[in-house]
Length: 141
Length: 142
Image 1 (cartoon, rainbow over the protein chains, first blue to last red):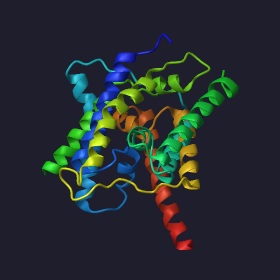
Image 2 (image 1 turned 90 degrees about the horizontal axis):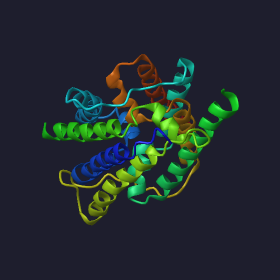
Image 3 (image 1 turned 180 degrees about the vertical axis):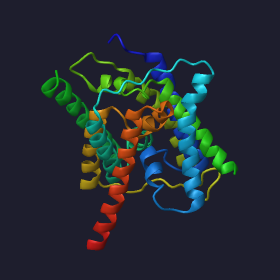
């Protein structure tokens, strides 16, 4: 557990939860990133702009933090390109089929005690853990 | 215009959270999911922090008749557990475990411009597009 960063984790989590609270109180919506991305396919112009602005904010945030002198973690990707493509297709299709991802089901859904979100969150965490086990400890070195 | 700026602000807050928490780095996420390896509990604390801040917001929202800037809430009302929910969660879980990226952090990681991130992101958007085709075909069949 030498890589455990509890304070950054908790602090960052509070910011994510605060964003979810603001979004539901101001706009009445679930802050589910896969739903917001998926909604870009079709929809009224104003709605698409609204979603793009939110996505732009997510991309810009780390750039602002870095330019303000915050040290952000490096990004280490271990998966190969074919693996990244398979993973991306599964994440894109699966989150739309299951109506949510870590933010929509995992944060917002659990916060409002939605039964569907509790089931989805348990299933995707368990499946992801089994996948990592298979990749790292069964097939991998 | 103010509505758009508000969305940008929510995105900034969310993006800052994903970055500061370390979840922008897939290695950190995989470290949590790897219970049999050198386990990193950080993602558990990210979820805890997020719930601490989101539960009061949702509790307050429940008591309001409408959100601050719209006529009504747009919160899902479906309650039954069905096959698409579970199958979708399984597919997402496999993809998440393979790459270590879920949609929010993948967007934040675009800021690095790394090829690996762009490839994952493009595939994820393609997967969402495929789902759109799939759901149109399914509706036609029904």
